Image 1 (spheres, rainbow, N blue to C red):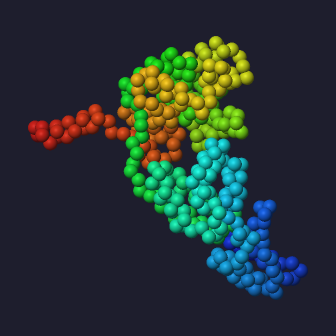
Image 2: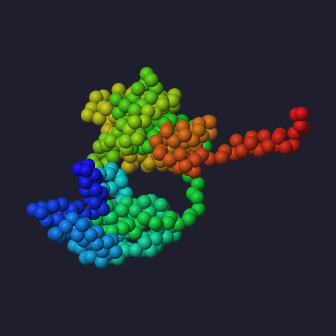
Image 3: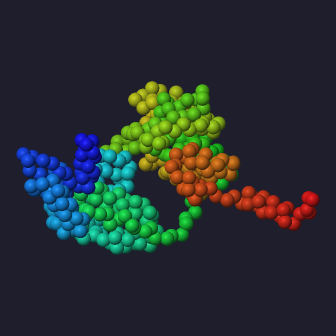
Length: 380
């Protein structure tokens, strides 16, 4: 019986209220929002019986759901809530994620709806923001995810009773062809790498498909040359103007990435650079710049562009180097699931839609095979 009462009590708490007995009287505590210091704001009243207290609590919750009860958050603007929400993001998410949200909201959301009362914002307001992003050629899907995170946070914290971003639709847009180097262009870039101090890092990226933050943050302790693999554990990120090694997402931190000959060649070249530089406070890093410091991801693309120019190939950034690796892996016969694990993606559909490109030569072979089947002589 006691266990059953406990389960009912937990269920009521999940519904936004609790009921308890004090000195023979029944009290109901209903959550109606949050106080300025972030603690829960409850309305408490007393009834003669448990049933009366429960009915009163449920009636008040129903009024809150319909937006009929004013709370201390009614005058809050979207900008007010954003500042509170981004503070939580800063604590719980990576610096890169926080910077992305600050840039996105600061440039495209706050100027449009920052002054509106949070509870007056509708789904249509947000849909118009998404539609404008598509017209500007920007990534509307990224904005949709960000808006959902922000407004779902308001609902979760009791600031609003529902999320107006829940049913947003990403506008249709033409599928953009992701740029990558061909096999011959990749070989020419590798040759250009041999004359550059930063070359081993570029070669390593081409051989592994690792993210720039993972490659620049790679430590010797993560490298197992004997067993030809690396254990990705941390990434290099800029925090407060300084570069720091930060923990990765949990699923990626368990990844073992095989080292092919190309990646091992880059590791050997990096070791030779360390011998030239000598011991320093940064000796734990595999890849260093020509000043003996960790390679800053911020300026890496500038050097990569120059190397592309020297190699006579189209300019690509380090992120597009990942696309090149994945595409060439697919051409070499790797399956989509192998590419997914190599690059550290969680979605197989993303790999198929972005990295698996039909190659002209393989299409020609397939077409010739169809000729053989349909135009050739019957074997029986």
